[in-house]
Amino acid sequence: MHLQGPIRELEEFLSSLPGWQRKYLESELLTEEESSEYAAAVGTPEQMFEQDAIKRKYESLLQKVPARWQEYVKRKKRLVSSFVPKGKPGRPSDRETLEQVLQLRSQRKSWREVAITLGAQPDQIPSAIDRYRKLLASARKRSKRGTNPL
Image (cartoon, rainbow, N blue to C red):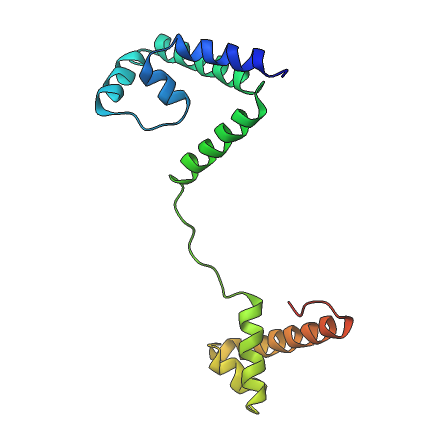
């Protein structure tokens, strides 16, 4: 198989590194002792540049082995996303709003009552009514065309 050379080269490179460094490059959790070794290895700017060069070399070798590269990218994405705070929830989706409007209209509620029930403030009632009418009209057009209402 044509990947044997790149895999062997990658394995040889990894075997030349200390255990903590292999685990760090492969995005694995370090033990307390390994974390101490890592901290000692990147204590100065020169050492940080050296570690960065090792990482670049590792990534360049890894890219020659597509399956391993894809695994690495997935691990990195998971690791990075674990530090990103979850966003605040936004407004309800139009589907939920449409379902609420349909339910209220089927109960013979006026547009004004629909707007008030869905939480429109007194000064927002005219624009809310307009929004709900357009939302319902748009859903009806889509259903006539045979596409999903929302």
